Image 1 (cartoon, rainbow, N blue to C red):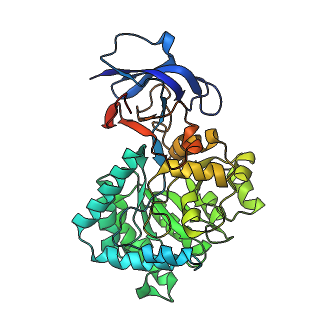
Image 2 (cartoon, one colour):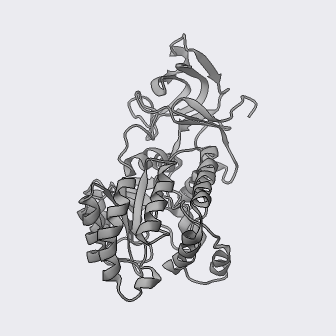
Image 3 (cartoon, rainbow, N blue to C red):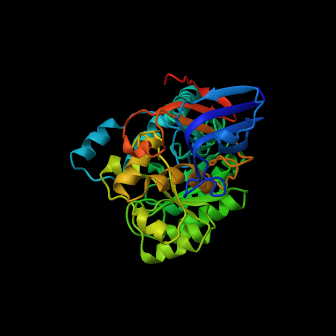
Length: 396
């Protein structure tokens, strides 16, 4: 099949303001033509070009870009459900639980790690996610971090080196020595398998000078910057991210006015992870404040075994609308094109002419139902590069 007509679309979300109305570039009673895996035409179905090799009639359902999940930690082993139970009973969240996952991950086989990544990515795809970023960060030795990146790279090109996740127990009390390891032998072994370098710049992890050193070392090996910033409290993470030209500052839970000004005047995307706040009973980021200041906002799942064990971006959209004062259009945009911008990608996150034909059919007439019907599995079909990746039938 080289061309496909997707017809009888109730609401088509293009994220292209020149193609439709509103933030999401919505077209009602629409159609879309896909050729050779790319979007070739969108518009009212009454004007749709004829002659496509194949036809999919979605019978009034909504079509939107595949979700772009720009922040996940999928290379891990083990289970931290007991930690979740303790938090629900009132125990405060801290980064210390990472050590539990570290021990399990180091002990796991390559086959087990790869199987877990594949399982979670398949779960996400069935729920509408067509692009996922994936970090290392649970090995924390040169060998374990390198194998984590190799495993991630089998499933996605968006691979992030997070050797500076926390200071492992064998370096307790000497964070600077661990940073020297990260910036030398660990990056030498890991950089060939990664696209991005990330660092957890927060209380209990790495300070501004250490984080900056890691990002500079990564940049010297051709890796682009990302930063875990201001999750656990106020701190220097945003300034570190913006100064490094990071593509994204992630979490952004505790921001000062200065932090917001820095983000608004930069190309750094604020990636918000509401499922992490949900799973840790922490304050939610104030997305409304960021958007009103002109900051580009993305939504991502933060899928990890300790603080956000979900791959479901629709759930994150619901939380963003309910808890972070985003409109449904803003949340859907942030979960699609916002995520693409956080990955500095122009070929995904929208259904503009020439972009990858990564799209989702909802069993609903509008993308608004993603927030309007929280928890309901609305994804009826998923296409990646114009090829059906998740079964669809007009019967739903």
